[in-house]
Image (cartoon, protein in one colour):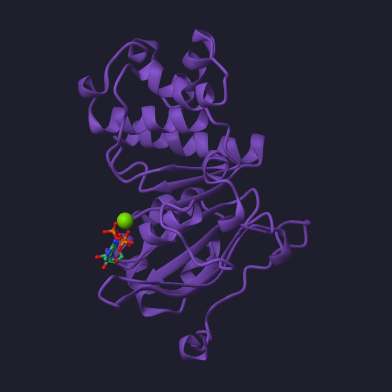
Amino acid sequence: MEVFEVDQPEHLLLVNEDEHGGFSGSEAKIEVKNLWRFSDKGVSILQNVSLDIPRGKIIGIIGPSGSGKSTLLRALNRLWEPASGTVFLDGKDITGLDVLQLRRKVGMLFQLPVLFEGTVADNIRYGPQLKGKKLSDQEVYKLLTFADLDSSFFNKHGNELSVGQAQRVALARTLANEPEVLLLDEPTSALDPISTQNIEDLMMKLKSSKGMTIVMVSHSIKQIQRIADVVCVLVGGEIVEVVNSDKLSEAKHPMATRFLQLSS
Ligand SMILES: Nc1ncnc2c1ncn2[C@@H]1O[C@H](COP(=O)(O)OP(=O)(O)OP(=O)(O)O)[C@@H](O)[C@H]1O
Ligand SMILES: [Mg+2]
């Protein structure tokens, strides 16, 4: 394995806050250790990624297109299988867990929503039904409201929805599984500003009231600054910076500073 050893960038801050009893490395909800991924042609897509994802916080992931953000997210619930000993949930190697249980605990929202056949309500009921639980109409309405959709969506079919509406149904469907971790891949890119704000408010609420751990890929630095506690910058499959989001202006990596300049 020595062949993969690389020096840690000097400016990689260890996110090891805080005087108020907050996150410290050992309290990570998810730990990623020396994670690599290669394409079939042997090109590296992720390069020795190590990251502690703090429990009960929102971590934002930014970086240029093609830098490996979605690939990293997908490793966290085994949509691609990371090597054993590289991704841990609550200290347990995820490759040793039952994959369906893992995906219930670690829910994911994709860049482009995919709904199943059937109505919106069928979609939302799907996950709990697999566990033998039938959500009441009331529970479905509540999840719709959470995801910023009104009750008229209950009986609609996937093909009657806009991308932004389908994204919110997918969010409600994920929340129906009561996940402990939410992986969000540009969740608001197809939403208008009002819906975006409602979804951001929901993320903050899920964090504060349920202690949910949220990992969000976003191309909007402003969004990351609004809601994330910690920001991780991924460039060329490598983590080049991890910094508290209120200290983003102190980031040293050129890509991080460029992102900041372009969005201000
Ligand atoms: N299954 C695969 N096989 C080969 N290459 C892949 C595969 N999946 C992703 N890649 C490559 O890995 C790199 C990272 O892709 P990824 O989708 O993770 O980027 P991203 O940071 O999410 O980009 P974007 O911001 O455009 O969504 C890209 O160069 C992509 O072409
Ligand atoms: Mg992506």
